[in-house]
Image (tube, rainbow, N blue to C red; front, side, top):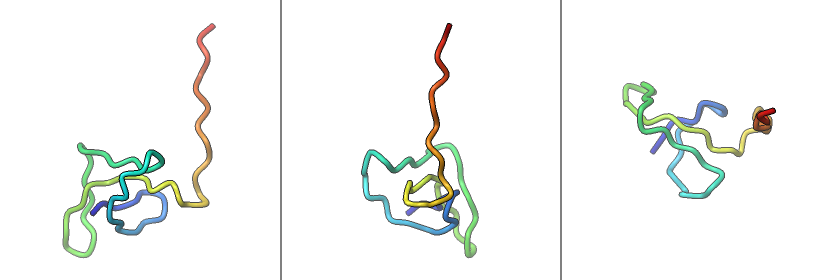
Length: 54
């Protein structure tokens, strides 16, 4: 289980490429400690464009 930073809910990992779960970040939610992550299903996400080196 992990806590999504975007949609602010707890999810079971689906192990999809679009899902990111951090191993160094934790969040207390309902008196439990969860890893934090991003489920990629949130409308609040915007694509990140890599910076091109010149």
